[in-house]
Length: 107
Image (cartoon, rainbow, N blue to C red; front, top):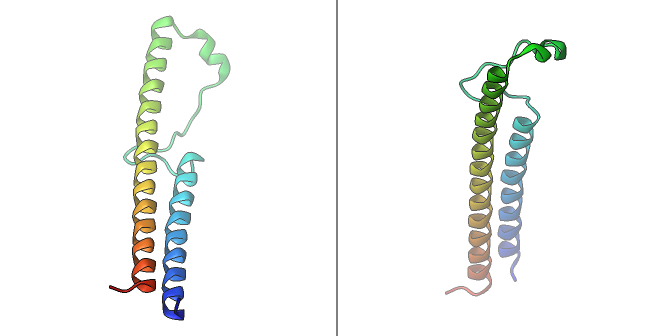
């Protein structure tokens, strides 16, 4: 294996690791609540636990429905990001394999 092919493989691995690290950092920032979801302002006030004792069953049901909708939206976004990350890593692996194969055994 020549030094040029080894250098090319190392550069591809570094690029894949850099992209992966950036995606992981972005997903961690979103899951920690550091960034509000797009199009929605960050919550400004949180009700006291004592005030939640006085809500009616209809209000409880409305809160449960709203929370389930928010969780479903967040789950879809997380699944979408995981799919994109898998596609990127799969593509990077295929490209690295092709490049290394072509450098070791040229056509």
